[in-house]
Amino acid sequence: MRYKVLSLLAAALSLGVARAASAADMPVKAPVAAPVYNWTGFYIGGNIGYGWGRSDNDFADAVTGFATLPMGSDTTKVNGVIGGLQAGYNWQTGSFVFGLETDLQLSGQKGSGAAICPAASCGPGGTVTHTEQLTWFGTTRGRFGWAFNRWLIYGTGGVAYGAVESSGSMNFFIPVRLTGPYSGSATRAGWVAGAGLEGAITQNWTARVEYLYIDFGTANFSSPTTFPLAAGAITDSVHLRDNIVRVGLNYRF
Image (cartoon, rainbow, N blue to C red; front, side, top):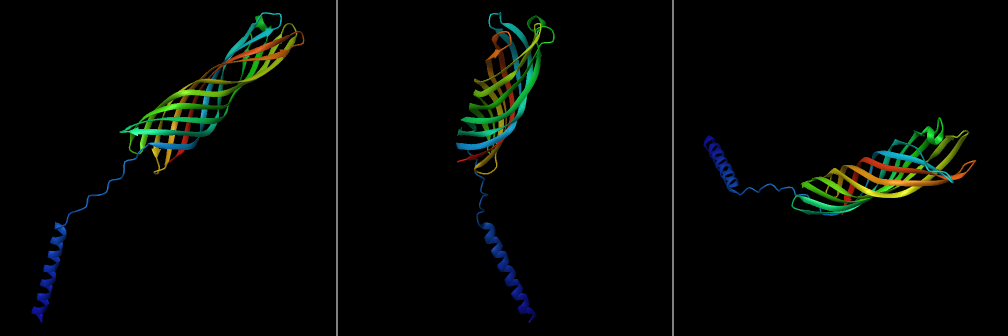
């Protein structure tokens, strides 16, 4: 009986060794590599961020029958929340990615100030109180970047356009105090440049963070105003520059 048990154990052990040797001789499959991400294609998405701008203002008054008088100048901070939509197309060759993107933003950027009017123009104590606002803007830009599989770092630049509004009141003392309100709006075009970092969340969704510097150029406002003694026009020359940081989410088709 003992001999039979030992024989069965020896046979089982021999079978196990043979199977192990056979498995060891079988070719091992190489692990499947994750596919390399490709950035080529059309995308659309949304963004939200914050803008902090600077408005350089020069004021003047042109009363009918009198010489145009300088009314002072100052710089105003134009800050606020922004948000909008973007769409574009990327082409990838090797690690290099280039593309074209356009976006349209609503803007809550707004700022107010008060410039001191020279006594020679306004009499003692003359001021110009004013408010500047960027109500909307958009950009059309080229993008040039370097892809690290699912990450893309890029620079961008192109044209910018937007609506600038200015309003306020000029206060005179010559020799009685007079006030003259003014307001105006203008659509301006300028240039934009910046950089960003974008990463793929899934095969179709990507997220980004982006910085842009925008120069909208100079907008010149002229608003007719009637004073108690004469008619004229108030002018405001506004040079608006803007910095924005925004985060965005894109869906790739």
